Image (cartoon, rainbow, N blue to C red; front, side, top):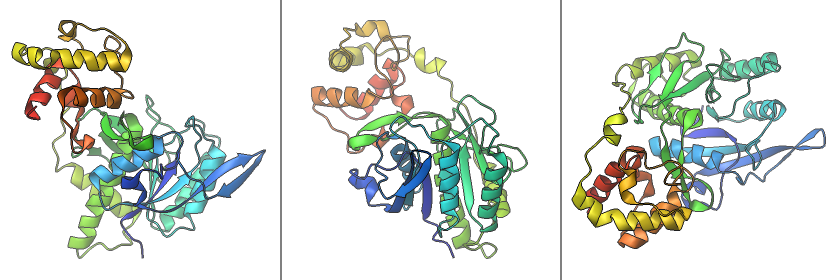
Length: 340
């Protein structure tokens, strides 16, 4: 019998200094090379940030999640298929149903071995979720018939998703940037198929937990086939729309808000990037762009500076949505809505 709140994350590890997330970690291991040999130890501290962001994304959908961490990627986010194979073999001996892999390879060299291991996991009624390589239609192990492959699309919603159990890559979830934890309790925008896969895992845990609780048909040993049926049926309950960014960029600028917040935004940009920006040059361009120097990675620092300038602090940075900061007009409106 599985605990449906537990999930294995095979990635870059977990930032155990993060008090909000580390309390959800039940255990973990690291696999790494020593020469040509693979060794196992219990140092799964994240020194990249990707695995921590995966975990926090899952938490934004399913706050009861508990994590078993398997670190196989280094500080550059790089790993190997041999390490992935070892991690999956480890999962055969863990009594945990959900396995999240936001790592991909394009080579078919280990196809047979990965397919065999993931089939063993399916036979144990375990569920393996794998992201497709960004920019690709297929990659491994996401394209294996024994896993739930996940691609991404810009829905800007954690609710909406597409699912077709008969496709090679069954799931399409939102890949739009989400503001979540990275290292040292800092925030960064996390996006792409890795984010989409983490979202898929969280939503699946949420949906299946509800099905098991409320249904006389399913129990904790729910099968791979049954999960595919549930996700395909659930996808039809949510309207999928792709947001139009052009109207946001073309939105009329409120001159009063420019006067109220403009100089503070200019100063925060300068403190973050050393770029002296005239706020009026940002009317028709994305706010996060080369012109401003603001990126998905340094937005956290920019926002910290802006808060100090405005003498206002958000209680939870998770509430910062990409649509609220993707243009100057959107940012000004958001600041007004915060009651600053």
